[in-house]
Image (cartoon, rainbow, N blue to C red; front, side, top):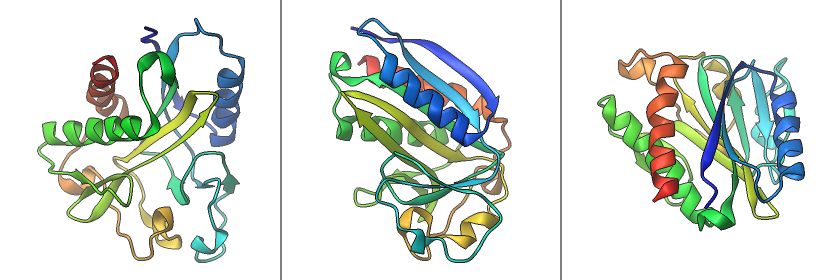
Length: 204
């Protein structure tokens, strides 16, 4: 079974550049290509999923809007938000899309629990929520049995741009972040328990 053997810390990176790198990695991978996890954050950008509707962008904005190939609607990425991208060959891992979504959500929930934050998933609205406010989003692309994209966790960022959209397509959905819940942690530190829980669940 091909386990995750490569974890890459990319730092602050342009969204479009990382998207193209994920696409190229997935298109060129071979059966023996190691699965990877990429840790990054992005300059301010709105991303619109495959079936996303631009009507969920509520007003004109100077922030770029990029159409991407993940599932889901519109969301916002910016500095201080942790992005973890999973580039996995799912078949050898015995994982289907729904199982992977559950693994992602549970990894975030278990991590937040370590910081004293009670969080939960919502079956009809993928992601992780704290008292009804969204703290983490997820979106995946599966192509030829391999996935890319992943999860975003609001850590210590400017949440104002979320007010310009219906986050993930939900009107009036509030968002929150760790720093507003009394937790101060750097992105690279937050990534450690998340990835620990991910790898443990994927290997199970």
